Image 1 (cartoon, rainbow, N blue to C red):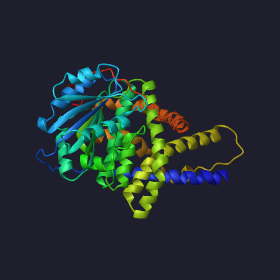
Image 2 (image 1 turned 90 degrees about the horizontal axis):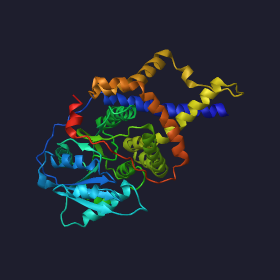
Image 3 (image 1 turned 90 degrees about the vertical axis):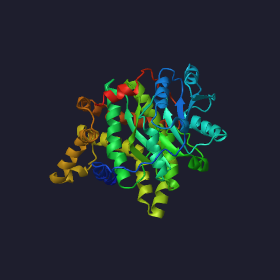
Image 4 (image 1 turned 60 degrees about the vertical axis):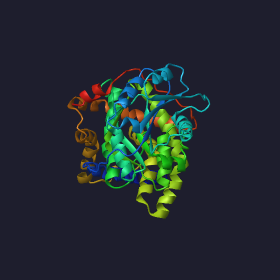
Amino acid sequence: MFDKIMIVLQVFFGLIGLYQVVLSFFGWYRKKENVSHSPQKTFAVLVAAHNEEEVVGALLENLQKMKYPREMYDIFVICDNCTDKTEAISRSYEGVTPCVRTNPEERGKGFALEWMLNKLWEMPKSYDAVVVFDADNLVDVEFLQYMNNDLCNGTKVIQGYLDTKNPGDSWISASNAINYWFCNRLWQLPRYNLGLSNFLGGTGMCFESKLLKEMGWGATSLVEDLEFTIRCIQRDVYPKINFDARVYDEKPLTFRASARQRLRWMQGHFEVTRKFLFPLIKQGIKERSLTKIDAALYVFNSYNFLFGFLLTIIYYINFVLPMDMNITSLYGYFPLWVAIPLSIYGVAQLPLAMYLEKVPLKMYWRIITYPIFLISWWPITVHAFFTQNNKQWSHTKHTRVVRLEEVQSKQV
């Protein structure tokens, strides 16, 4: 009986893995977006900040230099439960409005955004769209122009291209950067090319104001971006990625800080899976919507990774230690002409994604340490599963000041 269960699980997770492999092929090319519009849309640019006195100034300087009419966008810094000089620094920049929020009981960006949006709707000035950044970000100076183009073309929710501003600082920040390049190219881009929904990444997000008012924010989990994405998909509103609108995010330098951040993500991911998986599958089947079924598979990734880890452990234990049970591995039944190409492609995906994204050659050697980063997701995922009801938000401290010119110079 145990062996039969293991076979069923192998088939199930193998099909999910095969689906992702096939999907990745559609990320080998990129559809060009040549439709441009003159500046028409007005923006409320929200900067989420919690004790970000070291880095918020660099972003505000960056935002003031956007290649978009200055009278068509306003900058608001959400000083969320700050105990440092974030508010004072924000106030020192002309045209920047700091908004102070104090609520120690409801911590996290989801709550802060909900509070800020309610405050925004009460203001006498209205905006066509809302853009959200984190205080440690840097942004391409044409970001708002790209958002303007997409909004004019009818898109209601847009995700900018998430990149890393400090990939060379440590093996951890490099691993995060590789992860971004891979996901952008072989997860997000295939979905865009096939007309499926893309997924929000927490920052560099743009929302049509009318949609936000209709839906309400309502996303207060530890992964508010994924939660809002699913709510949009359920309403047949499909976010899209704009590959030209670059956002540079600062990544942790140490394993401990990265593990704490990833634990928070996985805890939130399990919560969203528990809440939305089955309703999304049911809706997708009923409506015969591949987009909704694809979104359900994306949401299921937390359990996919968890069970993949457990299956691997079981097989290794069975191989190393004498056991009375006979566990069949379906991988042994694959013909070599199938197994070998799949194995090679599995290894080649990282350098392929980096090549397609024109990553500087000096970053390729960082692939050597990436498997350590990847394997570390397994214990983090297991821990997250057993602590998924812990909704305590943890802050990632940012201390290194980097400006846009420095980031762009290193990409040449």
